[in-house]
Image 1: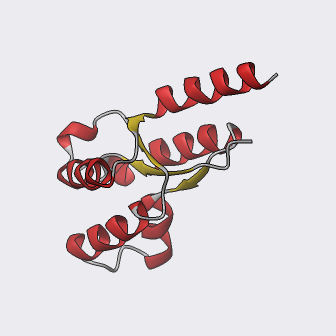
Image 2: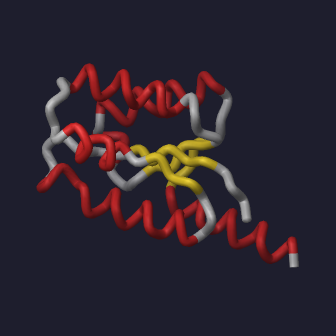
Image 3: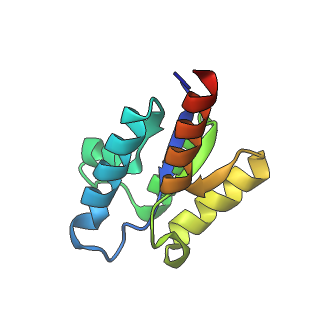
Length: 114
């Protein structure tokens, strides 16, 4: 079990239902691969979208400091928030990669462990 904590980053603003289905699907895949996932979609549900964009970003930045890596959803380059999250993670020196790469990495680690 990796036990690594990944922050899930991707576009929300301007997407139908704030792209929650994509966040939920990625969270499920990563969780099944033994990652612990911090998803901003869950934070948004808890606060019922009551915070401003800036307040959500402040929450996201704090959450990135709890993570060991950042997992990117498709479309992230078109998201101002995701770009900020990538910058914060890069400045922290934690790995940043698409969700699919994290899933392949976990598979390789598990194969090598056996």
